[in-house]
Length: 221
Length: 221
DNA sequence: TGAATAGTGTCTGTAAGACAATATTCC
DNA sequence: GGAATATTGTCTTACAGACACTATTCA
Image (tube, rainbow over all chains, first blue to last red; front, side, top):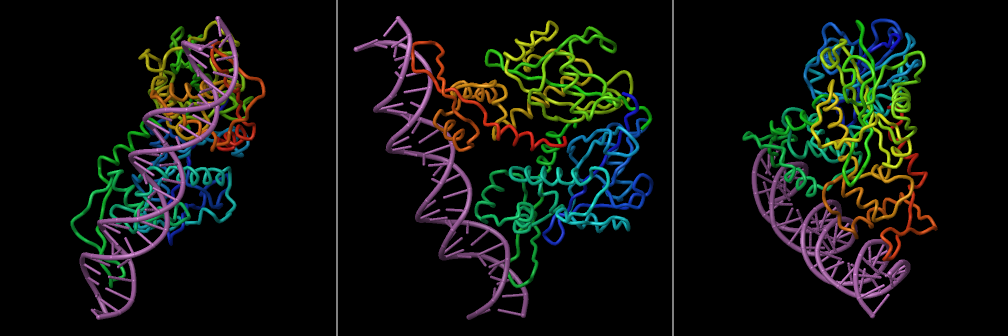
């Protein structure tokens, strides 16, 4: 083994103004002190139950955000990615609605468009790109985007989330057919209105059974 | 950090008698000395270029098999999975045709059906199940199964590989249409005959362009 | 009533599977 | 020629997208 540095990094993603944003913050210590980077930190062998637990802890400590959707992304490693030495970073990506970030209201968190080529330390640019590509690929056949839409949402809102992720318009009828056959949403009795002068849309939430299913898929990772 | 044990484990998969098999071997040291387990070992910070490199090295050392298709699976971690202490295992899965294993002819390698509930040390049973589930899920929309078929193969052979993975028969016309539109195979001039008394089948190989494409997908992981 | 968006019904073209015909080899 | 499997052609059915119609709210 010969001294391997073990860390976690979290790619916290959200939708804002119909664009995918990643949460970055200034590093509070060396290396790359004061440089904008992904929230990350050491794995604590004396406290963390596993790497996922470490990722949840780091996210909470650095951004104040708790228990969002969190999935293991990949592990990056090598002698050159961290100036301190041979290192491993077990990376995760998390999905939240933008109002969760607003509610946490952490002063250091900067939301940056994933497409903007902001220079990032370590291999964080590669990690962000891997996370975005994974999210887009999984969104084609899963309920993942619901986590970007928040706790409750209307079908038109959810469709805009999918469209923002995919970067192209979706056929409304096909979209609703697919959502229906996935059978993952349940209607809420209260209705909802946005710009006022038109028919209000039904509010939905993700079925709890479906949340468990997604968690089961990621069990152990 | 506090002393984290960093290892790699490899799930080497192959098809034999139309069933998916995993390569296991007796451990040559503690813990679990002489117990059947996945090939694995420490990451060498003074020699390995990254975890993937460590996995390739371990696979070569323990099974004699080189440069197969290798993809990162996931990272497993925690205080309890290894009796030596808080540990991380970056896991990979590799795909080879059974004749590659036969040619390596390593005396300690045992091929075991992935469905047989052989008891395995550490969390290796979970790792194997994760690998099999990932392979099956990816096989539905990729050229992955070609790596189980070997260097060259006929379309009927390749179809049997897909059917063995999926566990259900595939429509021949649909299968060939899909293969054609994926445009991943190239015909080889020499023909091929199996049970003799019938029309021989065309031999194919995976286009080299397509191998690169798959590697690109996994870049950095 | 008109504007605006939500929600649904229907038509059409594309793609997947069933079925079957043709092709090629060895005996 | 007969058996066996490879390969290709065609028909039918299911599904995705286009289009358009109805529904509901506010001004």
